[in-house]
Amino acid sequence: MRSVSIFGATGSIGESAFDLLMQSGGAESWQVRALTGGRNIARLAEMALALRAEIAVTAFPELERDLREALAGSGIECTAGPDAIVAAADRDADWTLSGIVGAAGLPPGLRVLERGGTLALANKETLVAAGRLVMGTAARTGARILPVDSEHSAIFQCLNGENIENVEAITITASGGAFRDWPLERLETATVEQASTHPNWAMGQRITIDSASMFNKSLEIIETKEFFGINPDRIKVLIHPESIIHAMVTHRDGGSIAHLGAPDMRHAIGYALHWPERAELPVPKLDLAAMGQLSFRAPDETRWPALRLAREVMAAGGAAGAVLNGAKEQALDDFLAGRIRFTDMARAVESALDDLTGQPGFATSPTDLATVLDWDQSARQAAAGWAARHGGR
Ligand code: NDP
Ligand code: MG
Image 1 (cartoon, protein in one colour):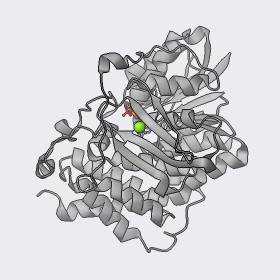
Image 2 (cartoon, helix red, strand yellow):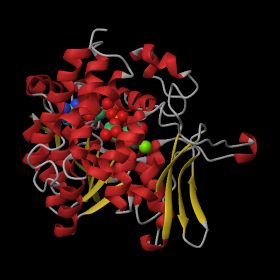
Image 3 (cartoon, protein in one colour):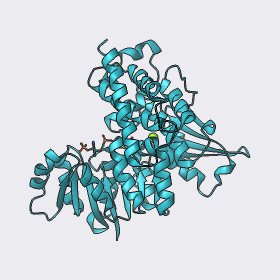
Image 4 (cartoon, protein in one colour):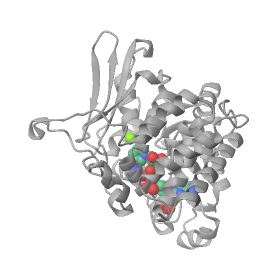
């Protein structure tokens, strides 16, 4: 029986993974080692019982008692806190899904790689903040990373067996998010509620807002560079409102291979779960004749400064990815709390990058976790400083 762990089990990615495990035999077919969550204790306990997990972990120590009560008598171990999450990543699972949101996903994901495990990576922040450390660790220990972000799973499937040296371009698509068709001037007034609806995908609130601001695509461009090791000039973004083509690889001979599928994360998660086999998955099959047509347009960087910032971060290298990610997470917190406007998020991130570029060590890619987390903290402080100076307008 294969053993699996799910980090961020109670989130959108985690729920999709849970559904796949339950639909393919549940506890009878999978040995579930660790399930981790955050504040949703009731759901974490329910999942742990359904899958007969060895251990359930909440990220928040103050919720440990609730978790213990919910699992009393079940024989399932309970722990809490960020260190307990990392310790759970040390448990020997054949396959571990990283579905935590934000930089909190980095330490446990890295631990899986340090022990040479297989990491199915939805948490793109891991590669954006610490690409060199993460890829270097996997190379050193022989760990395997399987991309779960839909575009990167698509690229991985398009590239299957092809030599990256022959790749002319990788194109990742973007739906354009909630504000694709809004006039530019209206973006200043966008509310949290408006930014929290996605035209095609049902996802967690943070990535949904990142899709509206295009910071999600910004992170994904960097993720593409870090994971596939391709020159940034060869990474293209294409607005594709229907979200049916997820990515396309163009070879130097002019042939392009695209990956198509319904916008349902269970495909990418299930692909990684069964890789290198292909399994029957409970996802809608495409009916292109019924759809009639697919549409495309070029992205406008005036509307989405996040795309320009991704290019600048890739050119800068060093700690720029960790700074972009940390500043973006802080700016998103500030937008959610009503301290800054929607369009201020890019301003705060750009300001944090400006503040920290040129600081000692910035030009060097961090090669240990502590240094990545230091840059993450400095970036959050710089972005929060911008919000304190300019917020409340
Ligand atoms: P959600 O917000 O839906 O879920 C996040 C998960 O992380 C929950 O289990 C949450 O627990 C847990 N969590 C929250 N804070 C912490 C913390 N500080 N430490 C540990 N765990 C924590 O996010 P998504 O599922 O949407 O996204 C997860 C990751 O996958 C992100 O990196 C996202 O960018 C990426 N991704 C998501 C896609 C999607 O379709 N949703 C598509 C592609 C990539 P709780 O809810 O119990 O508080
Ligand atoms: Mg994606």
